[in-house]
Length: 140
Image (cartoon, rainbow, N blue to C red):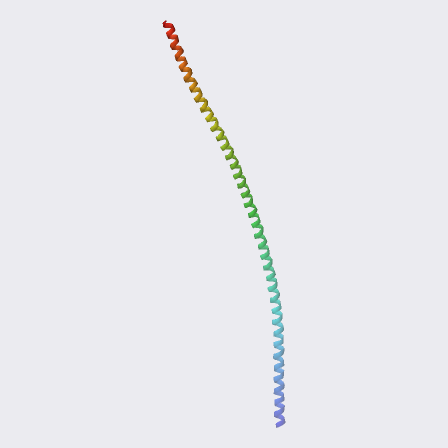
């Protein structure tokens, strides 16, 4: 009977070992599956990161190109504005010179007018004096 108990214990132990081996195989299989899934996910993450990085690089390049275009447009507008300011400044300087010349001409014409008025007054006085002389001579 003792041998039967020992045999039963050995069989139970063997069954337990077989069960643990089966569980070990199942866990190893599950580990291989999880490891494979993990590797696949890691590959997908790497692909997604690469795609994302490329998209970011492309967006940066597009933004930089747009910035350069806008900067060039603004620089062109600034250059045009500077040219306009320079042209307006030159026009103003020319207008100021013409105004000074016109003022000088006006002053000269005023002086001439004053001289002409004085000459006219003198001539008028001479004329009046001559007329008076003629009248006096006619009366004599």
